[in-house]
Length: 256
Image 1 (cartoon, rainbow, N blue to C red):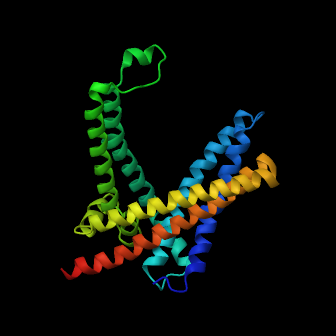
Image 2: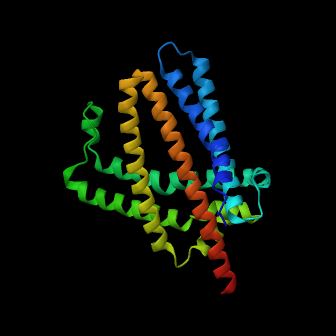
Image 3: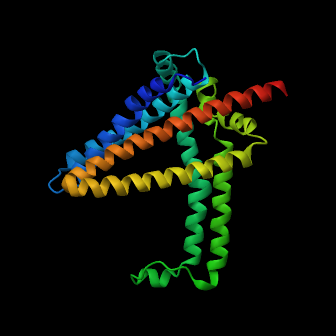
């Protein structure tokens, strides 16, 4: 489905992901520098919100294009615009559930295993050695649960894009990934390793070269440019994989 469409996907990624992300990074740098007023910080926050919305729009558009070879970039943008409210709603629900299911238990585990008396005295947070084992087990269980849920939700945005579903997209994603969880987990772990290695290498190389050639500000801009390109590329890979998996899983589920 994506043969010969790399240029179109790159166009969408550049418009919705790369350019907004680069602008946001530059604004944050300016706002964090000395002499930046409160108005600029507010602008940077508003730009950050707009960047998030544009990123969701872009991912939906790339998913639409990767799902159907008949969809060109203009139709993909139109489809994504129609499905944008559903995409934002689904993402907000996923974030809320993450906070409730993962962040709250982690906070409870920390609060129950950190010596609060020493913390109140200004000492750094240190887990009580007698409780460290139970805390680590709790963290491990939560991490495994988060990975499992993430794998089951791989086709979530593809469902939102291609089907008229809102919150029902969660159940549909779980149905589509039944029997494929371990394979998806393997892909996710491999993807995460590659992403971390590439981002670390690019940040170090471009930061070092930029610092020598252009100075501190030039190095920051060079790193921001390189990392924005990389993150946009990663988003394209995610959207294409999600769409391709969705198409194959839907076909298999419909035949069952």
